[in-house]
Image 1 (cartoon, rainbow, N blue to C red):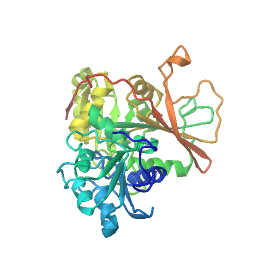
Image 2: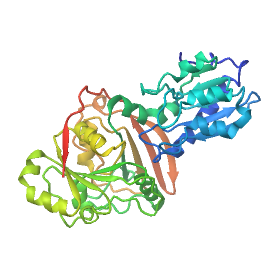
Image 3: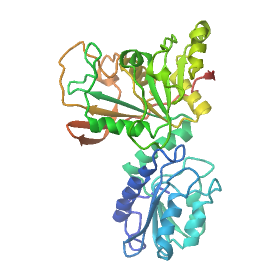
Image 4: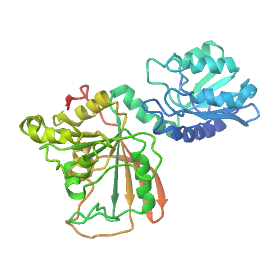
Length: 392
């Protein structure tokens, strides 16, 4: 059953308020695994003894590696007996790449387990019930930090689709480029390094042919430690990607795929073969971005997508409710030009009631930039996720 702060008995263990405090710490630990663990969940765990001291901590570091609970128990050693384990996700109850965490918690003599989210994966769920069967007090204690942490994993399990992040840099008055598409640079070096770091932690980077034509980007992670190598995906309905583009010229070093309409795939077969000779793959795509995301997940194992695109593609993705979060870097510049380029277009709401709702998670300063981190309200997801096939 779901617990509130009032239902966790402070006389039994460390107290409800302290549980919540340590649960937030565990969520911060979990994020350290981003880029190493996906499609697995990011998980953090803290072990706290009856004297309210942390005696162990851990997080899931990589796929196939020890889970957060096991890491924390190892650090705690004998001090785990009679202690409380506070973990961001319900401990697993199945044999996967590693043994069940419920067994490790039971064998360590933990007296109480507080977890921040029920496991949505039917293969791994049921840990709380098994812990209770072993006489271990167990509570579900949700908080905003664990909801946000687990949202990408929950989406992947429930929909089969990857988590989609959009990023853009804009001026104070909401422009991403001048009317002549000059955008270098709105954001500062520190902000751009953060973007490179994220490129090195996601599975795919999505852009549109317009961005390729105007900016000729590389979309690679440079001067950062890579946690994974992202596939670069170009939405190119007419298959117009020039052979001279930086994305094409580097396709043998960095996997690159073009998503194009079936008609273009067929009619521009010679150009498609020329792209293929340079290492660029081709994807047949209908006008359904859910289908594209499903194909990327199925064919390439994509769990996380970073969108670095112009207003046209970003607007189309927003229309289909496939963007889950946005990083908006606001640079200290003002254009004041009604014909300057904006981060999204093509939506045309008639009233504020028709606008897309977002939630502000955080505001951070990066030198003279402000980084606004938004989550989009969870859309009503259709039963079908579209269709797309991959070739070449």
